[in-house]
Image (cartoon, rainbow, N blue to C red; front, side, top):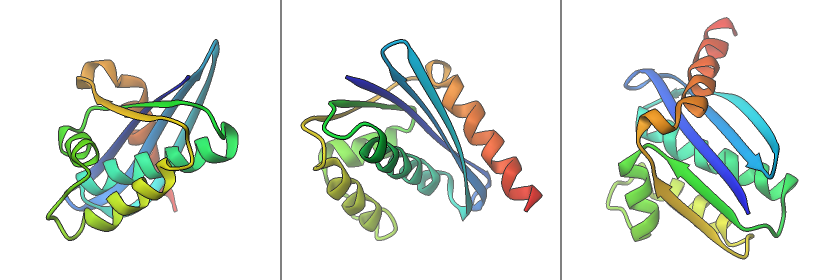
Length: 132
């Protein structure tokens, strides 16, 4: 099973944003820092999960993936598979589509203090936006 920790962050809401992805596969770990441009904090959280699913699709196809996020809003939307928010709907649809490529996709909420690694990567991604 692949453990995937994701975080999205924005400097301003909306503002420059970034995704941080930390993946654990057995004793190996992988880190990704992805600048996302101008998004709200919640949008950045969704995009972090989408980017992580795309990475897992390429690098760990056909594996069981277990995602962790500190965004209650995003985890609730994905678990309920429903949102009335017109901005979130296409993001949820993309997550639905990508998650079908895995035998099992799980997501659970974790407290911010347990997601520090992904948070640091997301904040680094914001700074990468500023350098462009």
